[in-house]
Amino acid sequence: MTRSESLKESTLQEHQKLEKTVILHLKNLKDKKEYADLLLAFYGFYLPTEKRILSFINTTHLKDLTERRKAEHLLNDVHSLTQHVEGLAECETIPEIDNLAQAAGAMYVLEGSTLGGQFISKMLNEKLSLNNESLRFFSGYRDQNKQKWLEFTAFLNEMTFSAKDEAYMHTAAKNTFALFDKWLKSRL
Image (cartoon, rainbow, N blue to C red; front, side, top):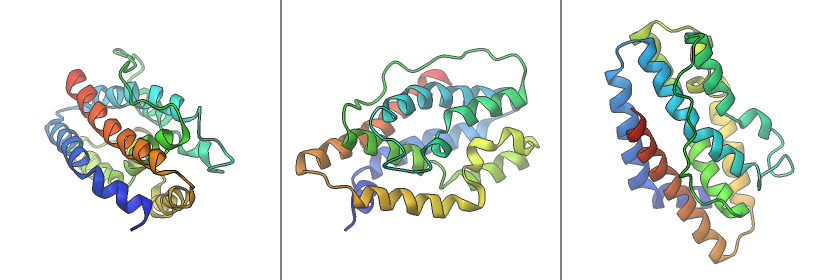
């Protein structure tokens, strides 16, 4: 079993819980204001988490790392919906990321969000008649989503980690899912 498959298996419960929270909220969106609020909640978690990840993962690990940053896309989507941004708060309880293994585990969660984004983009566009400028985050890498995911999992699978590092990575991934879920529930 590859490392990425092992992460998927070990985080399944936390992933499903977060997915349920996100899908439920998406289905209940009534207007673009509520969509902007959802994006701001995502931003509040992604920004500090990405900052910590970037303390340990750099372009020597992933050449396209700059392209993989998502917080900026979230804020741009919000600005495309409204000129007046309220509720810009950063989550203070992010996963522990104090080494490369933990950063890889947390990034696994953030990168994985692009996989379901195409379906979410379509659903949001049908529900709220959105334009591409307000769907940048959920569109991910657009037609390159699968390729970018394969590149990321190749990075994960090629890393050399001790058994202790493996445990750190799995714990960080689980905590990223769980803390993101907790954050969203507190903000929405």
